[in-house]
Length: 86
Image 1 (cartoon, rainbow, N blue to C red):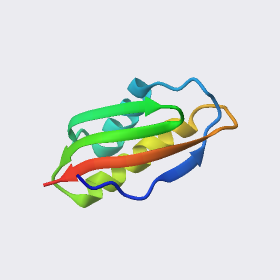
Image 2: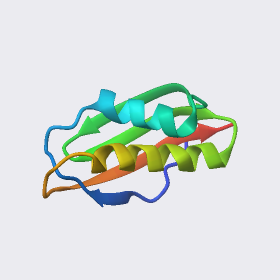
Image 3: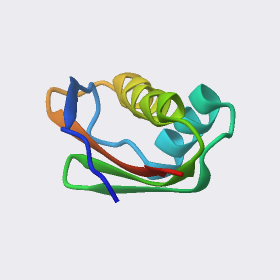
């Protein structure tokens, strides 16, 4: 499993859910990430799953960041993309 450098985005709410972020990733990738799991721990979002193309992995990061940006808070969040490309 490879983990890319964390990307950060300022979010606007401390109350964001893994399900909301998962939905954002699915929308951005058009459901091309298999076995998608989103774990949120203390301001860090971990993405896990598999996909066929590196571009889909990149889109998953963007989808997670977009979903987090929909909230209103002053804290920062990191996205660690552990999606494996096969």
